[in-house]
Image 1 (spheres, rainbow, N blue to C red):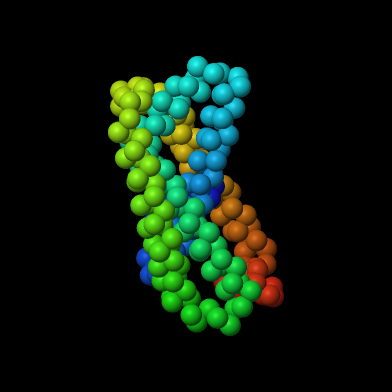
Image 2: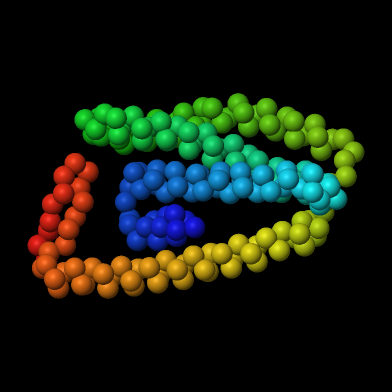
Length: 198
């Protein structure tokens, strides 16, 4: 949950350019995919332990609302994969960092090129599915069921923000103690350790 808080606070704090948007999208798509995987594992376990709840979950997931979510999930996974490859490549070859803006644009282009035909295939399957007669949950059922998860999610977010703020206060006090004892703040660099006088 700390990574979500970091993503939100750093995105709001820093007004960067293409690199910032790439960083933010990489974090959000990774967290979104992780959230989907966690929910998928939980829901799939219901097939063995709570068959009636599993059947209800499938009815809800067949609704158009969740179909839109499937499209978003595919876009998240594809972007995250391409951007992850860009990050690995630039970490392996730091001398290529000067090409980072072009690499970010290439990631966005590759994502669109891969996602467009996949979306076309998915849309065909969705249209075929909704042409048939299926028992699909209505929006009122979905809201009733998902409201329970939203309440839990809000509680977790509030707790994470509170803990993050508390950690920030503690870390600030530790920094003040270090400064009063030594007069300088240690900075850990990528290849070497140095200090900055304060």
